Length: 417
Ligand code: SAJ
Image (cartoon, rainbow, N blue to C red):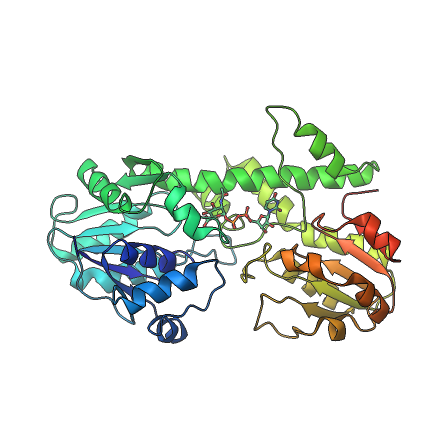
């Protein structure tokens, strides 16, 4: 085989994909503008937290199958995996995709394959990628093969899901889809479905929207249950015993770079038709304020110290993008609470304290922002002694109420009586 692949964007998706392809025998060049990412990569190191990725990257870098560069180069296959954020008006910011595609134009030659992996609004492949690639004077679909193959992996389980998940490939024509599917077949054990680009783009958005809407329903139920004094966790547990009901967990809000962003791409495309989708986003975005309201019910005085355990957007990852807990911290600070933060996964966040006992010293209230597994091993008796008050607010239903109450905490689970 020994084909050469150029992966543009070495983030949470690009890097694992590059390493996986390198491990399958491809010669892979990873491209990124972040010097820290490249310097580390070329030493066989990674700067993100993701199980088993460090070992795989180390192996393929030592074997010289993966190298990092700051600009693209000639290759047989190009994969674009750059961020697609939203701007302040909740519209897709496609600058990274446009820049990445422009950056490969001068290297693309006859017979090459270009794949977009970034989650993108419907029409991106045909309306953004294709016109840029036409600058090569090569015929798209005949001289170069183009398509969309969205990633579907869950942070924290990326390497497992890269291999096991089914994939959907949208080709600009059938030949492109078939050629792209063959590349992914080198490491994917799941089925690879081929279709057109718009269907694949839409499918990706629908997957994350489905999850966001489901969580929004649970979050709304939490508010209703609070209002009528019922435990939402019991209601969800019993409802889910029905064979056709599967409610997700309510919580402090939906974060990350996917669920909190992608549904807006659908709203942008059809604003008058996407009512449930938009309302779900608004509902999930309202949760940090609702958490603040729960805090105020527990602790009314301002100027009190509150400790937050966990600020990432979900457990056991180091990613704080769109984290609802960061939003909650902002609201608490605006309301004059003194905040201390402990999160062993996060290295560079302003005010983060890596000594737990120092962090909880003099605190009135402990908020469990994220249920990192390591929080189960905390000695809560010692924590309580260091605190000024004895309140815990659990936003994730992650701790044992009885045990905590036995040692003297007043434990409040959101959405419970
Ligand atoms: N969350 C809840 N309640 C739940 C589950 C999650 O409030 O029951 C919250 C989490 O705390 C987090 C957010 O939702 O803040 C998103 O977390 P997640 O674990 O649902 O998803 P992501 O963003 O880590 O990954 C999603 C996945 N999409 C789906 O499951 C449909 C993943 O497969 C995608 O590849 C990824 O988005 C992506 O990159 O698009």
